[in-house]
Length: 403
Image 1 (cartoon, rainbow, N blue to C red):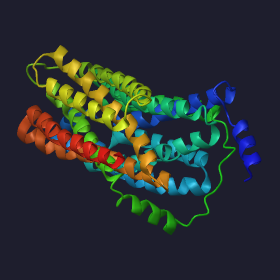
Image 2 (cartoon, rainbow, N blue to C red; image 1 turned 180 degrees about the vertical axis):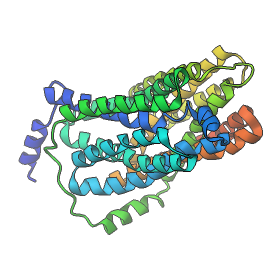
Image 3 (cartoon, helix red, strand yellow; image 1 turned 90 degrees about the vertical axis):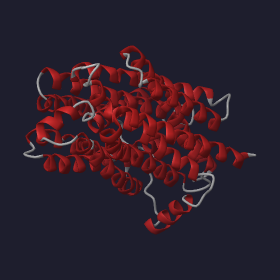
């Protein structure tokens, strides 16, 4: 492509004031809420799954981990596939397939069947995050793309929060099976909005690079001393964060709180501070080093996590708000750090970070269950406190690279 053609293509892309930009953001926000509501809706109903299937709390954590583990494989697969057949087709197909298991989950005859369905759902959930940012980067002009990506990431937090609150509230009022059927209806509505508003892709160009070369380029990132701390950050931060939120319902249903699933679900409103954290991190990065802000966000997360040990509901809520604020300040900047430090195959580097991020979700949802069973809530927060100084150390070491 000549320089003239490139400038003309840039001028033709959707800008902030175009109707097309608004349509894209309505569609991508709807899709993001759909996907992340479906990923995280099991967290508030885990105590109900324990009773319904006669399983342990650690086993109930597999309802999240099963979807996340398959999602990791799906991210890699759909990332390669979307480079070759297009973003929109991947998003369309996988969104439909994400919704289908919601009809079958409530009639699962046993927990093993439930987990198989969640595993299959997780593969489909991966389609949107594997293709979304690339789609936005191709269709929006350079002055609008950062806002578009920020809005999409904010919708991730909204979706996770909405799924937890929506399902938890209805599950307590009726049953967890009824709540999943309501989520099915809500997901269909979101998909219709997405499908009716998303403009077709105009600037996608199929990749002609062989899969072998792509894999080789991605593999080199694992040996990059500038990138390794960022990948480790994805695992460790998310491990501690997921452990807190996965076993929070078990903590709050016990003495001295004795909260119902409905009331526990409202505490997930603390995720709104995650939206603030994402925006705040982006704005502060224009004035402060990204690695410094990540370390500050990590310290805030540590403080919030420790506060939840106080047997006061108001103090616990404050602690959870700080936990979300700190986590999303750190997480929102990690993608930018990875993109900045990757000299080549930037999409591959971003994929590895996402894999490490969701690996932290999977292990935090399952391995933390063993800690919960032996050490209770104190054990959960001690694990977080033990891991996060390692994260601070890793980021301190990574700053030396820039000296």
